[in-house]
Length: 149
Image (cartoon, rainbow, N blue to C red; front, side, top):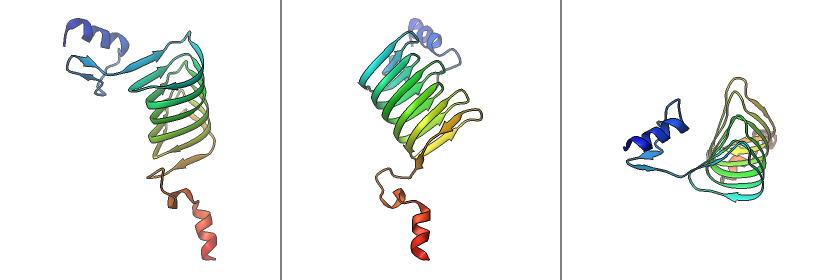
């Protein structure tokens, strides 16, 4: 890898970078909404989106990261969502939602996997399923038990 690209990656990710985003001489799609950016509207993206500013609206894409200084009020449809800042709204994640120790989440979440680090705050309705399209997993266990009585 050329020196300038390695230096660029080290500048963006000083703690290390081993998530497979750098492939050969290419860096995959990484978009950053910086801390001074305030946006409203509908957004879609490919790759990784890091939000350090504030965003209000709808978001659709692959890997969304709300940084510690980020504030998001939105309806999110993504493969993976990581919350290190403040979030309010609805999340549908095809895979995983992670709430970091600095994260605050108020809203509804549907996902396959949910991780809340110690110190992270989560208030809302949660639905974790193996398959988000599976009707049998959408029915609460209490409803199944009522049918047995």
